[in-house]
Image (cartoon, rainbow, N blue to C red; front, side, top):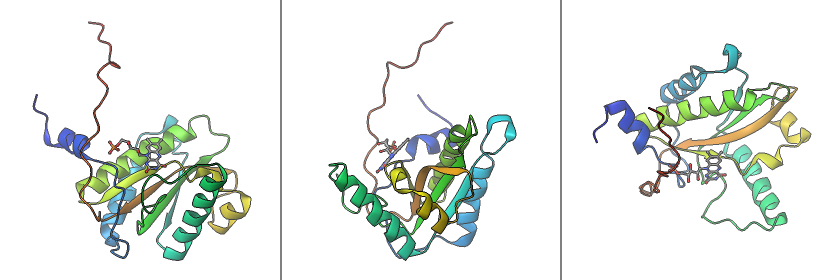
Length: 179
Ligand SMILES: Cc1cc2nc3c(=O)[nH]c(=O)nc-3n(C[C@H](O)[C@H](O)[C@H](O)COP(=O)(O)O)c2cc1C
């Protein structure tokens, strides 16, 4: 089956799990990626989402170390080098208001727009769920998350160090046609 170019871009995106640490993303590309995120659909167009774009390597190391510590305390062994953020030069913490019924959905829609936009610019990205548990009120304050918001996921962004792994097989048993 053949698909159009846009659909092929969606199919070709992979989660990037290694980055060139010190190669920053040009500002205009970062802005394009963030704009793609802002134009994602949201429940009743409430856009219940907030993005904290971290490009300070020391701050990224701080949340990385905390996540590794949390993993260790939970008996989780890192399964790849440089987890959880894979030395990405950008980590975006994506938050939603705690009381918004569809806040997490609004965030997830933005993350996918950002990942696909990133891919179209030749950047790697990865949806990172594992770091969530570290965001206690002290960290939330230090990282300037708005009052009443909670992190939903993080996204790594940057230029990939290694070629991406081939796509893992996709399910074929989860579509039902009623025609
Ligand atoms: C909700 C969610 C949470 C995820 N959390 C992590 C994570 O913490 N660390 C990680 O390396 N990848 C994480 N991923 C990325 C998945 O590993 C990846 O999407 C999946 O293996 C399919 O690979 P692909 O994105 O290359 O198609 C997450 C993806 C989703 C959707």
